[in-house]
Amino acid sequence: MSDTAIPTAMPKPIAGPVIWLRANLFANPLNAIMTVLVVWFLVMSLPALLDWLLLDAVFQADSVRECRAAGSGACWAFIGEKHRLILFGLYPYEEQWRPLLVVLLLIAMAGVSCLRRFWTKWLAPMWIATLVVVGILMWGGVLGLSYVENARWGGLPLTMILAFVAIAVAFPLGVLLALGRRSNLPAIRAICTIYIELVRGVPAVSLLFMASVMLPLLLPEGMNIDKLLRAQIALIVYASAYLAEVVRGGLQSLSKGQYEAADALGLTYWQKQRLIILPQALRITIPPLVNTLITVFKDTSLVVIIGLYDLMNAAKASFVDPAWRGSSIEAYVFVSLIYFAFCFFMSKYSQSIEKRLAQSQNR
Amino acid sequence: MATAVQQPSDEPMILLEKVNKWYGDFHVLTDIDLSVKRGERIVICGPSGSGKSTMIRCINRLEEHQAGRIVVDGVELTNDVRKVEAVRRDVGMVFQHFNLFPHLTVLQNLTLAPIWVRKTPKAEAEATAMKYLERVRIPEQAHKYPGQLSGGQQQRVAIARALCINPKVMLFDEPTSALDPEMVAEVLDVMIKLADESNVTMICVTHEMGFARSVADRVIFMDRGQIVEQNTPEEFFSHPQNERTKLFLSQILAH
Ligand SMILES: Nc1ncnc2c1ncn2[C@@H]1O[C@H](COP(=O)(O)OP(=O)(O)OP(=O)(O)O)[C@@H](O)[C@H]1O
Ligand SMILES: [Mg+2]
Image 1 (cartoon, rainbow over the protein chains, first blue to last red):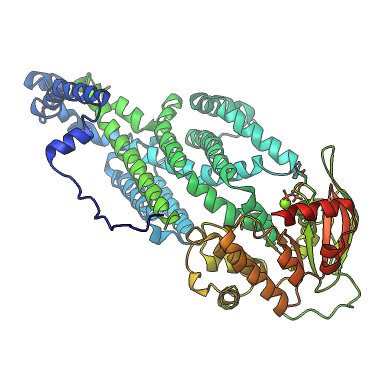
Image 2 (image 1 turned 180 degrees about the vertical axis):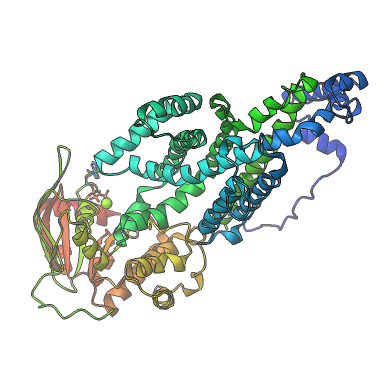
């Protein structure tokens, strides 16, 4: 240690556009080349994209032919005409305020669940209540609401229900599977391992296919599970196996000392998991966990193959109309934006949690 | 908690009879016989790998023994989970690497077992926790997280955490050997004070010979999974009998 430590002033942050450019965009040759390439790409593509999206786009028309005659850009008139079909599928037109309410309710509950203030013991009961309300709104048949069979459900509410229920059930199931795979009891360990590996070894599409084609064959004569429920079960099975592996990664990263300290204090197995192990393991796994949730959300679109009219399939149905045939790009851009909005929010949220946890660890 | 009925004082607190343990083919503990009286303070030393940790970890069944008997306060350790839980309720343990729960504050670390295992009301558990934090001289750190404390402070929290369950036995596994030298004294001070002020039975694996001299009723030397020699600290240090003990003492006293 030096005893002539002169207090040095903290270096002034150097600012200015040129310096910023050099530091961020031209720091080294590779960086400079990348910058030039990206700028070139943007210059080439942005104007055309802008033209298509906005400047040459047509907002008022009665058919795709009119659209194409009026401008070379996107035919947003098509979305104006068909957005309710895309968003709500074949749900009775007059009753579509109900699925709209469901979507808003689910978004609101998801938003509330993101706020730490609401992470109390009331959160789970609130979700259960929400799902009950969702069921009442979608099915109806009570409180003067007309009955709508779930074969007519579709679009965004269907996608959201499939995804939310899949996640809500698969998450606890995945945690149990992860714990089971590390259990001391050989039978439980074997069952969990086989389940996880079997499911992960099969594409989600074939799980859905099996659920829709094979499940009815396996069931006793006369017993019939609804198509929606079959898809929902397949998604839960699929999501739980992946979530289990993510959680297991977190469990493995904890030191043996944490288990031993909990044991030495006399905590029971479940107390130990709930109070010591899982809170730490789940924190570590937030990024891959959110990643899996995003995947599950997007993979709900695979229910197309068993003929459910989720958001993606409803979009497809929308350009079957002869007057609008050929508007597939607009339809896909529209639903992509919806998917993107959800997934972007999830990933931003996970980043903010990570940042906050990083701060609290080295407080 | 009502204070336990005074047991006949001749019944040992901890009794190990012909305890044997293997890791695969490796015989870690060989015919361990040990009887610890109530309130007795025992220091265990011995070369690395001699089975000291394994032996004391058998006492609260963090490790299972494969042959012999271990009886803690009249309860024999078997595969019966209830017996294991009963023993763990009365045995506190302090680890080399503290093993505090990093996601909980110091106070939460301390109240966890009283609240969940002993079912103590939260306010009462917190009051007790603060009392022990004062005893280990860090009440002002109660609301910090373990990661914000120095090693010595963390180990004192760990000691307080073990004391919060009001144990009859305290096990220490090299509590100072992961600490920077300047922090060893603060932890040893706390342990000496604990020995002076309470009548808890203590078993401590340590190579701090000063501590052994001032606190221990008996020093046990282990080598290759066996108890080779045991004696009062004075006799043990001044007249070691066994050749291995002499060699070991010359090695640790050399530096
Ligand atoms: N889980 C395990 N599997 C296999 N061998 C083990 C295991 N745990 C410990 N051992 C071995 O058992 C022997 C005794 O270990 P133990 O930790 O009890 O020694 P120790 O006396 O505490 O040593 P140290 O002073 O290094 O802590 C060592 O040789 C060690 O390698
Ligand atoms: Mg050891």
